Image (tube, rainbow, N blue to C red; front, side, top):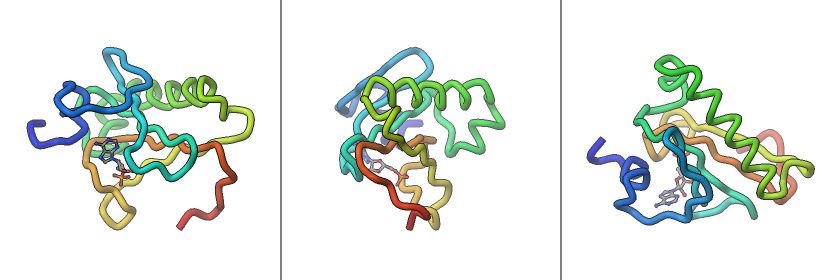
Length: 114
Ligand code: AMP
């Protein structure tokens, strides 16, 4: 989508601190990190949120979760624990309407989240 921030990152039109890229997915460090490790995992194709992605392409949704897990390993937070979060809708805090999984770790994480 032409006006989508994360599509622009996928295209390379906006710089990002990319930790993984393949044909299906890109992962990059959040510009406003909420934990020592805060990485966004997104599909290269545009879907507004996780539910829409799962309906359109369930394998891609599962692939993103698997990728988040492998990045947790490579970032050294797999053993200490991490959280994968996807906000859906403005009331839940979604500010970018291109589905993204937040991978958070490297500190103790509170439950329930705010
Ligand atoms: P959400 O509020 O759940 O939609 O998450 C969007 C996330 O994108 C926020 O955590 C932002 O800090 C992050 N973000 C916004 N712009 C950029 C950018 N240019 N590069 C990296 N992360 C960004």
